[in-house]
Figure 1 (tube, rainbow, N blue to C red):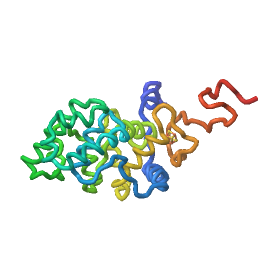
Figure 2: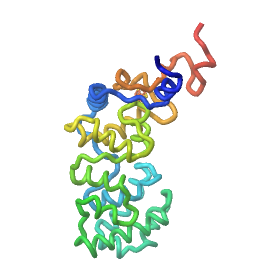
Figure 3: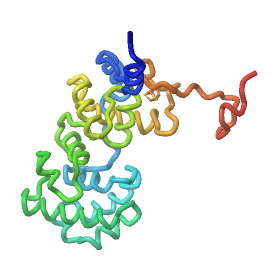
Figure 4: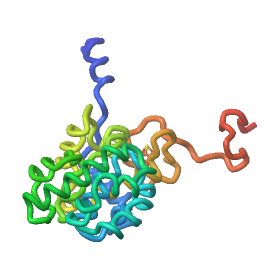
Length: 244
Ligand code: SF4
């Protein structure tokens, strides 16, 4: 006989997809975009690193807007150090946390010159030692600039890992480790982008668009969003206008 307590524990445990379902889900969301790319504009590992540092709590679109003029004036670490904190700030004032970001961009450029011959190191520890660079930024740079199979867990991937059951976890690191362990090895290289793009455009935070989700068949989310009723004007809740 199963006790009430163990039933409750079972109900509280996050649900997890089978490995076969993880493969099915990932193949389904990858099918329409086999070679996904970052939406940040960059041309070198250095401009990618700076763009990712600037993207904390800012959209890729807003970062691209400021990076265009910033990289035109300072395309490499030497020019960025010459531009200085005030000069960088002039370009990036429209994005969140611009003061701290301007300081970090100049200081990380200085450290790249002093410690790494002006090059972006292909090494997690060395990347994470740079100002403004945490595990997520290092993962993006290692993945996008150097082709490594890392998993940068941002807000979208953290939500998807838990919501779908691919890799439930209480912290970004737990979700990262779960995804690395559970996604088929040959799919890992691009999975970070497939998941981010899916979270950004389909499996949205407030209202996932499950009716048009290629992975719905495998997803374990209980409250899937049904197809909207075309007769209901946009902005009006579905429940306000029930079908007869
Ligand atoms: S079915 Fe819905 S909740 Fe599940 S992954 Fe797709 S959009 Fe997200």
